[in-house]
Length: 227
Image (cartoon, rainbow, N blue to C red; front, side, top):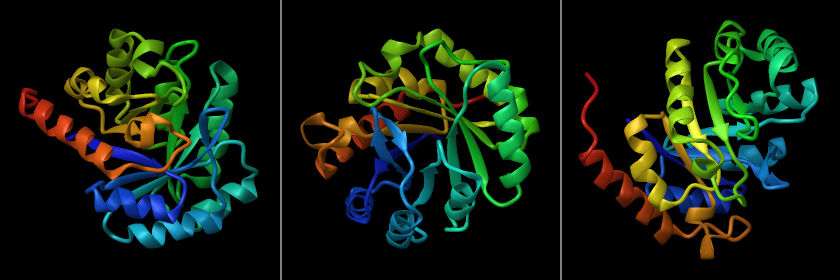
């Protein structure tokens, strides 16, 4: 079943998301509209609020090896790292996998600008990554405008062949739930759509979270079960 995931930057935002029934959190700040790492202390505060009620993944792009180790040591469920295309991406997956795959789940995040790099899926799996994430900037027109639905479906199929979990996020709105839920990703991530005035820089709005959750419930009822 696809989980509704909400991006939070503070313990207060995590508390608001949990109160609205969210069970998956993505701990991240914002830099140029894309997820940026929080400090280890800020992440610990979010984890303390989440407790056993929600799984927490954390943005981890651009950090030094020591910085990655510090985040991993917080007990976070997973670290999400942006991965470039081609050989550079393969090298990063191999390097990070060797150093961290035994201590924390790793998720490779791919930007949509050049389209998903399908060749890196098996590389991620071999390197010890457990999942992949297709993510667009929150302030953009959204993932469904940046990537064709057929290519998102191919991304998910390629991930499944490599036994990787799949997350989708970036400028998603309530109307995208009906389009993406039938593709059965593991997570659909939201920030702008669940923020006041649909502005990702503004606080979380629990009423908007509940509206997205209602869309999940409606469309899940119309999604045929897997064979």
